[in-house]
Amino acid sequence: MQQIKAYLEKIATISASDWDFFMSKLERRVIPKKSIFLHINEIENHISFIESGVVRLFIPKENPDKEITFGFSFKDQFISAYDSFLTRSPSAYQLQALTETTILSITYSDLQLVYKTTQLGNLVGRLTAERLFLIKSKREQNLLNLTAEQRYVNLFKERPELLKVIPLKYISSYIGVTSQALSRIRKRV
Image (cartoon, rainbow, N blue to C red):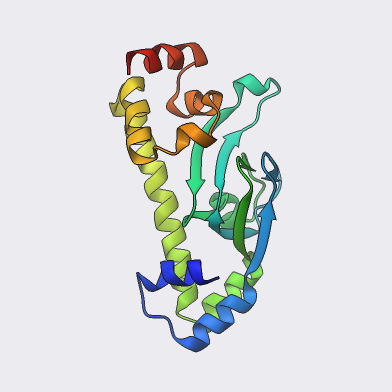
């Protein structure tokens, strides 16, 4: 719990009473490697902070080779199918732990209580929304403005540890190329 506190205290001063109330609403969950912890058509009921691990956001397909990976989240980041969380409607995608992943989660109803009774709740909500928006915006801009090779190089400049933990088929889907095209890019790079 100290990890999320340290993360949030970089951004704002948190009163002891706000922190105690917020902490009482957090649940630590350990997600086994390769486990899907939000399935398509389920309503997202959590915003979570990743203490350790890597999470993949993807659209499943009947043929697993055709799945579309559109995001990754890492240690010290918030994760949620945020559109489903906000609208209380079924998710169009899934969340999967690529490694054993430890998260601190707060439910929708508990977050509403935190919003009503603390200043910290609004900070968590805003940070989550901002982070998810920036990831989405950056991904869209990269897909529109960069070549597949540039997207691959940028991905590993930002997150060099990806090669160790994320299968290449997910990386190829994320940068928008086939596995064969990724293989050619890797040979050139």
